[in-house]
Every structure is written in structure tokens, then in C-alpha cells.
Length: 545
Ligand code: IMP
Image 1: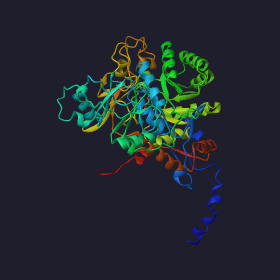
Image 2 (image 1 turned 135 degrees about the vertical axis):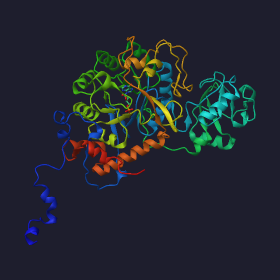
Image 3 (image 1 turned 120 degrees about the vertical axis):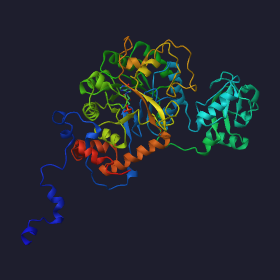
């Protein structure tokens, strides 16, 4: 007994004793990410070791530079996919401090209308209300009520925002009416409206005094601009993290384009609509087409931020950085709907790709966006730890209310369709001559809220161009279609992700992304590889139900 205790060290020297080890517990990032030793890693292949908690999680800030000149307060972006990001998603994410990239598998005019809706959005006003024309019927109103849950609908001569406001229908106007009755016979024409430019506060007063449910806002010619709903006023929140252009104070708008000559015409429309950030959407970004496009944009629109990609190696990154890219999108084959690695035999495990590219591009002040393969908060934290400035999510957001398309039931679960842009369905959707609004598994891509010209010659197969297959007679799919479960509104889901990151940073012992980068680089943050059984242990296991 006495000989055993004599070998024990004095507990009060524990911290001092740590210094006798020649390295800290776990691996440094450089050791972890040495792919010659461990192969390529995914997010699930490693863990961060905990640090020391000495501040509340609410003190953590997640501000991050996502292009050379754009800083976001939350590092969340949504993918430019036709089942993920249209106007509603872009507005909601920008209000919450992130950024939605409006997809280009639609006509340029409809994409530009979505960009314009983001730029014009003022919190509280519905910039893209559902509108009908006098020749629509009571059945159309009932259908909207069944699908979207409301039936206070402004009526314009064209059936669209921007048309002359001629009436409004509410639930009482259509109750007990024959479904085939025209709205011209039931709509209320004695309207209370407000003029464009009115503040929320003033509009609030008018709604209160008029006792109406909806307040249409019109321009000096009586054309419908926007709408205010009493129900929205009641729950009107403020968004302190909103992603706004510091000069114009409008929400940031971002959209994707391809790299063909016709994309230059598309881009001109988007810029005219107020675009701040363009994403060059390609599965393999290191191409002469993309390099030419970056140079063209930098020359023609020097104010526009260009996110180039996708890349997974520093050699690819170097080409795009040298051409003038302001940010890089990283990922090839990591997306949840992606089969590129299997079909094409190219790609890279995502954690290794994010580390390799960020380690290089951050030296030039060009931020990295980790795109694809994010399915939980832990993946987001790992991407940031590896050097990314933000994450881009498709599948994680496709089931939210703000994603395009409607919910439907599949095997008893409420779901929305989600499909890869390289899936046969998405490639068909973008083909010239295919209808601009088709419905796939309950998805309407391109809603009637944004005007979509009947036939637009510049609508070429945007999805196929992402995979360089627009000229191929035989299409080889690089993505699949499926559905994802209902996740509610991003207005609840993004705050959940944000709070999760705050808690994770607290466990690591860092208060912001810059500090995280610093302590990862200098070896203070340590890592551990996870064996297959460690991954099983880390998941839920051993429960009966
Ligand atoms: P997720 O968040 O894991 O669902 O991945 C979304 C990302 O997958 C997108 O941002 C794209 O980079 C990528 N992606 C979209 N469509 C396809 C496809 O059809 N094949 C391969 N990758 C795709």
C-alpha cells in the first residue's frame, strides 16, 4: 500500500504535469487531414475533442465573411436547386442572417422576378401575394384555401402582382357559392387600400381602423404592389441578424447562372433586378467556360460578388482564384441526392475537400462555402472547423415550408419532393419547350407568384449545363429524386441550427469563427478519428424503442 501511493503524483500538479507530454491529447488538424495516412475523410469520420467552457453559449457570434465583400451573421446558405430555393426561401434566409441562392432551372424573367422580390422585401409586407383575376372562379379560391390555408386574395385585371387592383375576395365571399361562379360576381370592389411607400406602422393603423383582414398596397395608377395581412402584423417579428447590403439597407439577393453565352443575357436581367451575389453553378468549376465567365463578370459588373465552383482540390481553386472569384463553393459528390462519385468516378470526400481548399484559398482572402452533405448541426460545426466560412444546404432545407412545392403524404409521412439538379427529372424540366411550370411529385417549380413567360427562348436546359451534358443525346444522371420529411418553417429551423452552433462552440471553447480558425491552426483544438464502431457508439444505440 505505502509503496503504491508513493508512485502517485500530487493532484495539485496535474496542470503542470501536462507539460511533460511532448504533444497534446488527440491529433492536430494537419495530422488528422493527412490523406496519405488516413485517406479522404467525411464529416462523420472524426470528432473534435472538447475544450474548456468559460462563457455562456449565448455569447457566441457566428458572423462570417462569405465572399470578399459580403459578411453574413449566420453561416447558412441554401442550394440553387429547384426544390430548395426560390423567392420565399431567399427572403426567409436573408431575414435570418443567411443567404438563399435562387436557382436557374427556370426562365430568366421568372428568376429575375424572384431577385426583385428579395430586394423589395420589407418585413411585414407580402411582396409576392397569391393573386387571381376576375375570370377565376370560386373553385380556384377554395383550391388555394385547401392547399395554402388562406383565402383572402386580391383580384387584379391580369391575375398577377403589378396588374390593376379590381377587387378582393375573402372566405365569406365564397361561402355557400356555386364553385363555378366567377370571382367578378362575388368579389368586394369597395376597397380600403394604402399607397406605395407607406410604413408598417401607418399600415398597421389603417388595418386596425378598417377592421379588414388584408390591406392591398397600390402604386399611383392603382396597380397592386404588395399586401399586408392582419395576421402577419400580429406576429410581426424583427430580424436583428438580417443579411442586408450596408449601403442600400435592402436584403442581399443571390442567384445562380451557368457559364454559357445565354447566361450572360440571364445575368443582365438579374443584375437589373438588383442582384448582389452570383453563383456560377457547375459540378466541375475548373473549366475554361467558368474562367471566361468570371473574367467577363468582373469586367462588366465589378460590383457583383462572384462565387465560383464547384471545386475540391487546391489546383482547381487556384484557377478560379486567379481569375477573380470572390468565394468558392466546395463539394463534388457529397450531396445527399448525388451519385456523381459512383457514376463519374470523380469527387472527393467532403471533409478532406473542405480542408484542402480552405487551407489554400483562405490565404488569398477567398472564403469557402462547404456545399453538400450537411445533415446535422455537427456537420456544420465541422465544416467551419475545417476552414469553411459557411455551409450550403439542399436536403436539410428542402422539407421546410419556404422551399418550393407542396407537401404530400408518402408512407404516412408529410413530405416534400427533393431532387438533384443532375437527376433526369430536373434535366427534363429545364429543356427548351418543356412547360415552365410542371408538377413532379407535388412540386410546382416556379410558382404563379412570379410571372413566367409562356415560351422563353433563353430557357435552355440549365440543369444539364451544370453537368456539361446539354449537347448529349443520351443523358447520364448524376443525381436522384426523392422526398424529404416536413421540417416546418425555416423561421424556426434556422434558429435551431444557430443555437446548436452556439452550444457546440461553447463545448469547443471558442466564441466566434475567427477564434475557431486560430485555435485550429495553432493546434489548440484537437481531433480524433472515429472508427466504424465509434460511429455506432456515437449514434443512438441499445434502445428497445
Ligand atoms: P445536400 O445538402 O447534401 O442535399 O446537397 C446539396 C448540394 O448537392 C447542392 O448544393 C449541389 O452542390 C449538389 N447537387 C445538386 N444536385 C445534384 C445532383 O443531381 N448531383 C450531384 N450533386 C448535386
